[in-house]
Amino acid sequence: MASNPLNPAGDIPETGIPGGRSAEMTMAEQHEWHRDYLRRHPVSRRNILRGAAAAAAVAAVGTSPFGKRAYAEEAQLAVGGRHVGFGPDSTSQLRFAAQLSRQPAGTKVFLDHGPTPALGATVEAEVRNLLTQLPTSDGGVLAAEQFYAHAPVDGLPGRVPHFYRWRTADGFTGDIRAAATAMPTARAAIVPFRFTMMGDQGTDETPALPSGVVPGDYDDKYYKADNEPNAPHATNVLRQIAAARPDFHILAGDIAYADPSGAGKPAQFVAHGGKLPDGFDKFNPYVWDVYFGAIEASAAQTPWMFATGNHDMEATYGALGYGGHAARLDFPGNGPAGCPSAYSFTYGNVAVLSLDANDVSYEIRANTGYSGGAQTSWVERTLAAYRADPGIDFLVCFFHHCAYSTTDAHAS
Ligand SMILES: [Fe+2]
Image (cartoon, rainbow, N blue to C red; front, side):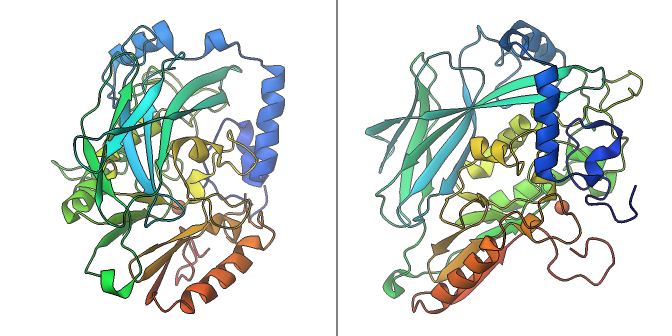
């Protein structure tokens, strides 16, 4: 292997490509490898990990935002893991999202919303189906299916709480929360506000699936130095964010860590007590379930805005590895074409740019150069436009990698 691999060990999620070969593969090459593998190992929908088998696994171990039996096909359809974001016009648009506990099977999902807790308006949610198929060490496929509900609401007044709840046609009714759009940029409207920023978050919760996962396999507790007896790392971070009651939160990438690469663990997933296999099946899409459950305490009422880091390039989802994020999150979509996690929004006299450092990293190069310079020229144009805007006093760019570093590690 080259001494300067395209992807240094542990710096991108391992999604089942054996033999360490992903170190020398771009995201597009890894995705093509996945497609080829799956053509040779077709999976029937019947074998997707859900239903009765999933229910048994859920009963055995772990926590989920839905409770232990919620994944089972005959269980009541539930909505959990709520997260809110700004739309492309942050001062008038909110994007409401959540996860469904199982396949809705035709059951409609609704967002009731309005200016008071009486709500009054209803939109039918779009359900995005995310299919994950990962090569496993025994030569098979771990197949998972997740369902995300999305409801955009436009035409809202600036920075006024807007109330909402999730509901399903077969009887689930969530509790009522409120979120607010951004402060308008008009000088007369500007009052003090607060935002928080964090990167490299992860979760302390142990995913319920697949069976055999134990605490420390995927959750953030594996990094013991960060943990305190009563407040593990990610929980503590989340508490600080929630306690700050920010007007919005920006997350500079490495969001859920659906695989623990970089933690110095062996690059294999084996069920607790099993012996290390010869291949690799470490990426676990169900980590996202417990992640959304964990951040809900803040993200159900505070808009969370995400950038993508190196651990967010998930090769199983499309040529850039960003297809999972497109199903799970609501990026504003007003950035350069082909760069879903690059976008901008305003809050009062502040303009915020989310940038995708994976496009310009010289250190972790799976996606380096994918925009063909489109992102960089968009950044130049967008910064110039905001600098020329008399309503904007501050520019905040957030992105994952170090722009400058005084060490020779992660000097991206
Ligand atoms: Fe990172």
